[in-house]
Image (cartoon, rainbow, N blue to C red; front, side, top):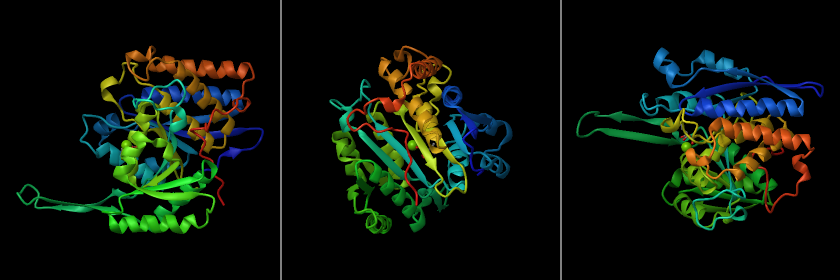
Length: 389
Ligand code: IPM
Ligand code: MG
């Protein structure tokens, strides 16, 4: 990865963009327009290179992400992606060949998924309030059952057999746990390990030993443990008990969808796939899928992609700009009657337009985000900065 060229006079970043499938290009388009505007307001430049990857490209060429494409992606400061998945392509092909390939090739070992309910946004959970729902899931991002170890035998016979193995390495777990402790230290100093140590004894022990070991170096952070099944109930019934949850790849996948709907819907949830070592670009994406059923209808909410763009800007060091984009997005979301579909009252591009207008208006009256008193435990959803030693 090229280091961002950040001389005070001229800050410039290169962004690889992948629209992908379904609603991906629509929501990504709005996010990119927001980045253009916020960059102009905050005096930096973002150069974007679109990569034509996804179902169309695959169906036409049979190619997913080639080594050459990886080499091109590697020359960018970060990657921003819309969504991947298409009913015309067998399940798993695009997911593995594109998203997992990039996550793995660039050692994006940590996936960060904030879930925060904002004032004015309804949760499907009765009586949920912003004070009760403000947590971050830190998901191990390249291993576990996602590493695709295993074999099949006796295919097509009554004895057909499939073995799917879960890969758990100490370095990947430690990187994830260390990041989670750092994040917790800057939030409410509480880390919860979520696993299934009563059944997955081997991997569970490696995870809990690693948490205990690393926890010694974070005396200010209280850490505890919850089983994954109980965690899904707690997320619904009392999310306030969580600050940072650290968990393995598959549990993180499941629980982050659940957390996303609790905080207002899948359409609002962003994520960051972080390379923590500087050996490759990090990737930012909404956590929702390609929603082919509503593609082209204008019914997709671009907020997840726009929050992901803000996470990306924060990661690149443009914290003020990230915060301004995030604040304008929240302001517009609070005004929408619903979070997706025709009930949203405006289209994907109108939501994007309203966010850009809100950003410009706030800037023109000199309203910077730091002028505002934080509400309650409010902390930026897109601020990932942890001090790294
Ligand atoms: C996610 C998605 C991906 C995952 C798919 C698209 C590979 O569900 O980012 O949560 O399973 O990680
Ligand atoms: Mg998922």
